[in-house]
Image 1 (cartoon, helix red, strand yellow):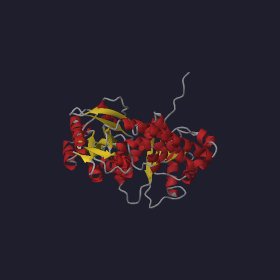
Image 2 (image 1 turned 45 degrees about the vertical axis):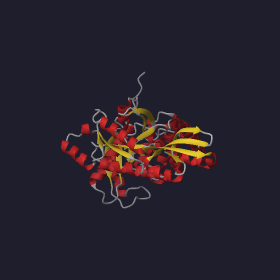
Image 3 (image 1 turned 90 degrees about the vertical axis):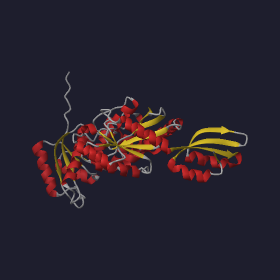
Image 4 (image 1 turned 120 degrees about the vertical axis):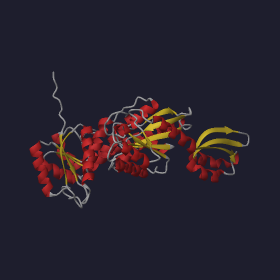
Length: 423
């Protein structure tokens, strides 16, 4: 028996930039939205935009633009409209009534991709939690459409079984998922403590910048590498041997993107914890992308929101093999003198990255020996809080600790324990 093939949804993209936004910026944002739609399995047929000072509370866009989109839907057989901004439940409902096709916003699209790519229990739990938190205020709209049984982009995930009755059931499910994630965090903390003696690097960057390819190149790990947005949702941590033969740990993390919803970041707290616990961040940027400067800014802003902007960082400009203009490469070298220019796919300049990692590992690590008399045991929690304990040895008059510090924490630690530090 031959099954009918599910055809990609014919999609119209809609952007609502602020009045005065440069045309190339609007085009960049629509281009990224198109990539998201294709990653979710849709077919991009056309795109429109309307500059506005503020959104129409009823339909987000103006009446004239609504009519224009209605014509495009009829003319080009569109069955999905995707907005580049978040819509309120009322706006979504009104637009679907006007267009008579499914309407989703940027967050719903990203969640659909996350649901498609989630592989581990942790990732699936995080995605479902994020979906339910986003769907909770939209239950009224969903009730209207349950009978239609929409399929395709934007509806994969928890489904009707979690949202079939009312807010009470959804809230209960959210609480269970939050509890499950806490248990996962506890388990990950146990594993993390077992790795406390190792220096930790974490790869961060815009989605599809090449982090997983770098991970594979540096560690020979069997990690998923795809030319897709959000191909990686799970954190992978592997050992890496540096040129001086010392071992460190390297973690790959979920990619960042423009307009990443705050609740989505919160849902992925357990995955992003690897960024918080890393000693050094390796910021990977796709230098071949003409919008990579904005992408760097998005990553910087996200790291600031995660309160890890103070961490030492290596900037890696990846995919230089895709840049044909040698003059542009010289420009990048001049503009970003501290950056490492590489091609992870071709293995170009990987050793320079390893040497930079080694240099930072040596520069950022400080080992301090502390001896606490037994009558000063009240200070023990502070040692554990402010450092990683490499060794602890009980002696007749007290306990000797070998503490590993980051350079930035050294002064504070020394001031607090100066009476107990041994040479």
